[in-house]
Length: 119
Image (tube, one colour):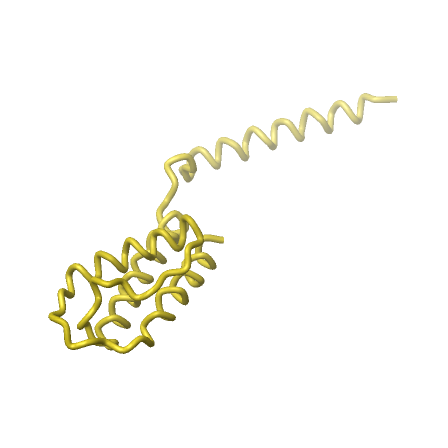
C-alpha cells in the first residue's frame, strides 16, 4: 500500500516539472527541501503539488534527479520493514528444534498407545 502511495506521489512531483524554469538565481538546496516537504504532504494529505517557488531557476534535469532521490529514499523507508529482521521473530537453534521433535514423537507415541487401548 505504501509503495503505491509513493509511486502516486512521485507522479505528482513530476507533473510540475514541465513548467519552464526562469533565469532567477537558483537555490538547489532550498528547492530540494521544498520538494521533500511537498512529497511528504502529497503522501500524507493526498495533496497535488506544483513546482515550488524555491525551485525557480533550477533546471529540469536537476529537478528530475531530486525526484528520483526523494522517491528512492521514500521507497527505502517504505520497504525497510520488509528487509530488516524483526525482533519479535526468532529463529530456533538446532538443539531447540531437535527437542521439539523429540517432544512431538513422545506425544505421538502416547496418542498411539491411547488409541490402541481404546475399545
